[in-house]
Structures are given as C-alpha cells and as structure tokens.
Image (cartoon, rainbow, N blue to C red):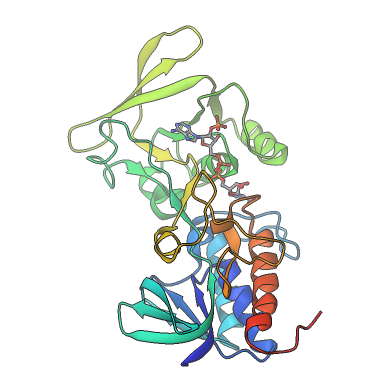
Length: 306
Ligand code: NAP
C-alpha cells in the first residue's frame, strides 16, 4: 500500500480533508488534475465564508493550498483516470503512475454547465465566457450580458460592473432570481439591468460576439440584443465519471449519494464537497471534507476520533 488515503480533487473539500486526515495520523495523498482550488478559484468575491468579510476565490484558495500543503502531499497536474477495487485495496491509475491505497475520498467538484445554443461553442473565447474573473478585463467600456439567476450570475454581473463594463444585463429565464438577497440588492444598487422571463436562443457573431437572439417567455416576443460579450453562469454539473466507473451510486442529477459520515455505497470510498450536491458552498465543502477524512479512520484501523 502506497498511502492510506487518496483524496481526488484539491478544492476546499480536498484541502480541508487533507488537513484533518494528516492531523488524525493518516498517510494521505491529494491529486488534482489542474493547479487546485476547483471552481471557487474563479469566483470574483466571496462574502459568506466566516473570518473573511470579502475575499476573492483565488485568494481564499491560495490560503487553503498553503495550509493544506503543510500537512498533505499534493500532486498537482496529476489526473486520476480510473479507480479500481483490488484485493481489499483501491488502485488509483493516474496520468503518471498507479498507486495502491486503502481508502478514497472523492472531491472532484463540478464543472460549468453549457447553454447548448448555436454560436456558444464557435464563439467561446471570442466573447463567450464562463468566468468573469478570467475574461472580464477584456470587456471594460463594453456592453455585456450575464446569463443565469443564481449567486454566480449576480456576483459575476456585479464584478463586471465594478471593473468598468458599460452596460451589464442579467438575463434570467424565470421571474425570480435564486441569488441571495444581499447580492441582489448590491446588483440593484450598481444599476445592473435584470431581464426576467428571457430565453437566449442563439449567440450571433462572425469572429466575435455581436448579439444575442432573445425571446420573452411570457409574451413570446423575439428580439436581438447587441452585446460585446456574454458570460454564461447557469450552474454546474458534477464531474462524476471516475465515480460512475467505480460503481459509486449517484442521484438522478449525477451527484454522489452519501450518508452523514460522507460514506458512499462502496466501503472505503467517501465523497465530499460540491460533487455531493446540496448547498454547494465553500463552508459546506470544508465541513464535509473534514467529516469524510475522519470517517475514513474506520477502514484504516485507526481510532475514530469522536
Ligand atoms: P445555481 O444556483 O444552480 O443557479 C443556476 C442558475 O442558472 C439558475 O438561476 C437557473 O435558472 C439558471 N439556469 C440553469 N440552466 C439554465 C439554462 N439551460 N438556461 C438558462 N438558465 C439556466 O448555480 P450557481 O449560481 O453557479 O451556484 C452554484 C452553487 O454555488 C449554489 O449553491 C450557489 O449558492 C453556490 N455559490 C455560492 C456563492 C457565494 O455564496 N459566494 C457564489 C457562487 C455560487 P432557474 O433559477 O430557473 O433554475
């Protein structure tokens, strides 16, 4: 056995789990196919993680990375391709080599949901973006739309206005935003235009985004909306392929099913963070990571610490 516990994914759940696991005496390795942090790295601003009144996702992630690195070994840019159960252990096949471990914690998080309309793929990187923090800079003084009605969409719109985009509109398919009221109030105060009951059916442009084909879902009216950029912020989908291959049970939307100790249906396999669905907040990811790490002691022959 190379390690007792392998954590797949170095976002808030994986980092927290690494800290708790090593402090509980578990020989732990963390894998991340990229540079760590998960989707939260791309969040322009987080205002509901205690201890930080306002902090960017990138800064919070960096603090977590530094903290977790003091404890666990973290293999960045090492992609876990498959996990197989073998003789009571788990074989982790990565882009680099194979590892044998006793317990696995799945923290792969989510990825951006696509709108799946004509023009989206063709104009990605040419005015279509999924990340205001990454690309907003290129739209200073320009008109942009953010599609979506959740926290991410509203936070991205506020950020785009803050960095100097000219007109910022939120386009939402329903008549009610999902975003927290505090974010909605902030958007309102910043003069962000919210278009309710509006569906985007096509993104137009030859080399760059020029306009959106929109329909009002109440009165059926169609029109063209001129924009220089469109930020698609319509939620996330779980990155569940290795979990599926391993035989881990998922709910009907693809999130991993866990019990209160973050156990999956397979003994020795735990899951934490956004990949388990639910509230999908940094604070819940961290808490679930901690619970899962400590729960894994039950298959490692270690004393359960609570
Ligand atoms: P979300 O809360 O799932 O919201 C997605 C939004 O996109 C919804 O308004 C949804 O509309 C809309 N949508 C989904 N599919 C669509 C489609 N095909 N076409 C048009 N609109 C579509 O996603 P999120 O805002 O990315 O947030 C994900 C999770 O992270 C949430 O739990 C959120 O609270 C959390 N988060 C927290 C913070 C923070 O607290 N600082 C920041 C960002 C995210 P409907 O409303 O009609 O379903």
